[in-house]
Amino acid sequence: MKKQFVIIGLGRFGVSVCSELHELGHEVMAIDMNEDKLNEVTDVATHSAIADGTDEKSLRGLGVRNFDHVIVAIGDNIQASILCTLLLKEMDIPDVWVKAQNYYHHKVLDKIGADHIIHPEHDMGHRIAQHLVSDKVLDYIELSDEYSIVEIVVSSSFHNKTLLETDIRAKYGVTILAIKRNEHVNISPMPDDKLFHKDVLVVVGRKKDLKRFESIS
Ligand code: ATP
Image (cartoon, rainbow, N blue to C red):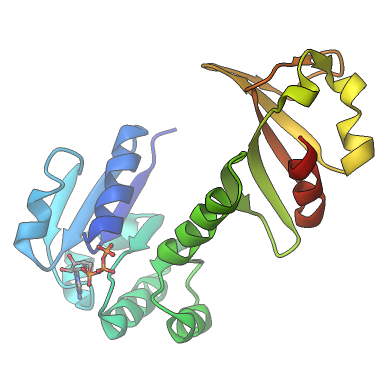
C-alpha cells in the first residue's frame, strides 16, 4: 500500500531515505531550509518545500499534520532537531523517526516522545565491523543485545547436505530463515532442502550461538 512520508532535512541521510522510499513506490514531501538541497531530490520527491522545521506555522501551512510518518533528518543542529520533533509530537503525528547525533540527543528525543530514534553512523559502523572481522559474514542486523540476524556464506563442509543432515538448529541453536542461491531466495527452507558451497544463509539466533555457527560453517 502506498504511504505518504515527510522528510525534514536533506543531508546525505535524508536524501538517501527519500530516494529509497520513492523507489519503493511511496510518496514523499521533502523539506529543507536550504533551497540548494531541494535540487537533489527533484526526481524523487513528490513535493518539496523550503521551510524551517522549527517553525510551527510553516509546518502547519505545508499540511505536515496530515501525514502519519515524518522523518527528522536534521543533523548537526541538535536544538533544531529537538524543537522540530517536539512540534511534530504536539501535532499528534503518530510515527516520528528522528536521526540522533549522540547519547544526550537520544535521551532528550526519547523524553519528548520520538517514536523511533536512529543512529545511522553508529549502526552502519557496527555492521561494517562485522564484515571486517569475518569474511563469511555478508550482512548483520542487530535485533537486541542478545539476538541478531546474519548472512553467512556456506562453506564446503556443508556442501550437498540437506538441512536435516547438517542438524544446524539442534547443534548450534540458530534458525535458518532463508537460503539465497544466485538470484533465488528460498524462504523458510524445508528439512530436505540441500545446501551448496557459496549459498548464502540468512540465520537468526543468539549472538554467541551465531559466532559458534559462523566459526564452523
Ligand atoms: P548527513 O550526515 O545526513 O549528510 P548531517 O548530519 O551532516 O547530514 P546536516 O547537513 O547538518 O546534517 O543537516 C541535514 C540537513 O538539514 C541540511 O540540508 C540542512 O539544511 C537541514 N536543516 C538544518 N536545520 C534545519 C531546519 N531547522 N529546518 C529544515 N532543514 C534544516
